Image (cartoon, rainbow, N blue to C red; front, side, top):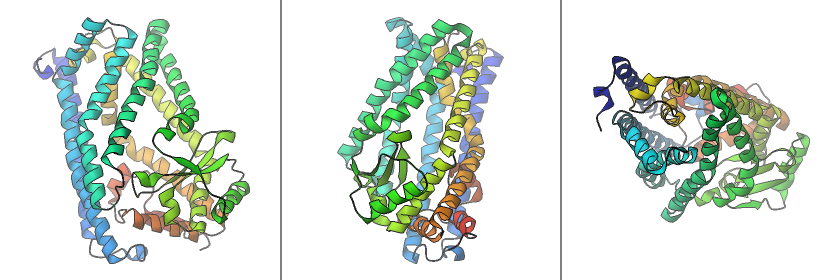
Length: 426
């Protein structure tokens, strides 16, 4: 295999070089953002910000600073290795070499191509396993968050890989068959197939997939259940049941969410969340989640995702017609599979720069859900108290750098949420 930057026409060499430059630019930006954040955290390490007094004691605050810095250092290593692996597989010719061997050995059918794409995805995920292991069993364990066992951790990965193959192979195979069946408009049909698949999975995943990883049990009868059922009725939020998920099986981090549609909707609370918050605080957290539903944030995000997918498929269809794009990475033109693979590998290089826009939208939704919860509860204090407790329990960064927050935080900081809730009665 000859490094692709040493062969090809000037246009093809420029394309490959430009892609490497984009990967390098993203890595440089990641490095600088992480560096800014760590310095910002260290600059505030000696004193808790006045507005956040009482969230943590001094010992816990120091621990949160050390936790943030540890994740920052690990993130630098992780991002560097990801960039190096991506560069290596793109310019070494290994992808085109493997694709040629697969087609020669197994034929050029849609199902062979689908298997190739999924195999590459699984292999790249396998390369990340040592990093994922270290994050779970070194960093998370060091700060008291890890509760999973090596057996459970490996079983989760094996189940994930098997599900990827079982669900991904038919979907990708169908999309590649649509290329054969529908001609120039394949990208529109493939997009429709993907959206249909995603909608079906949103309905089936709570029943068929999530129980493979976690145990769900009904919230026992009692004051908490009565409080939450009353809240759901008061906010006209229909739910079939309130379930408790054994999140403590893997981590001490906590969460709450709802799954399913219509009458099949279920409210899910992590058992760790129930252990950490009081009844009014749990009610406020659920009111926040219901706020997302009542403000129609979920369908808006689904629509945004669908539009993004449509643009992505159209872009792939354009790239699939450019011989220079194929040759730049060692592929022979004429098969859409390499275009799908290359787009999948490179999409993050572009979308990284758009993440502040995406996160700004999501943070706006969080503010709206917070305001809904405060109004429904007729008191912002339970939600503020819950946010402060969750920040303390998760050792969250109290002083992130604004630029780092813009690129990486889908939720506003605690300080921002407190200030937004301040006008509400407390």
